[in-house]
Length: 151
Ligand code: SF4
Image (cartoon, rainbow, N blue to C red):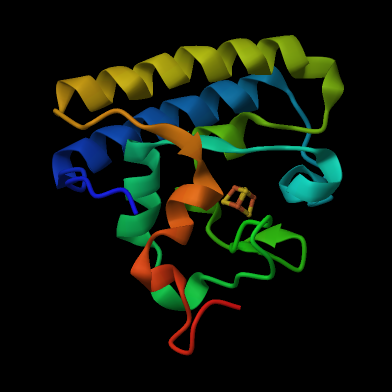
């Protein structure tokens, strides 16, 4: 368990604005999402999705307990029937990863730039920096477990 103070509403709102800019930039790359759901299949694609503490706080602040559906300890609890159930709250790594490999360089550059911006936001708002697998962060939250215990 990793105890830390949650991000303030001001920090969460600042992150929301950063995500809006990010989404506009990603759209402008022309990268195509075929909605295959493959990008969230971490075990099969050998992915580890990292997120900052601020991004995890953003999910925690917006996502109710009923949304957590742990199918295994390796899969994101919001990946249901190959779709993301928290799309508007998802992290930078979720937003900037496309299986459209023709745009990889542009997407990587955007990812790095926005990661630096999110880390700067953490400093600006006095948030203890953290960068860890999102699943691992979420697994520590009491609300991520169903009442009878995690599946
Ligand atoms: S939050 Fe959504 S996009 Fe990100 S890994 Fe989970 S299901 Fe996939």
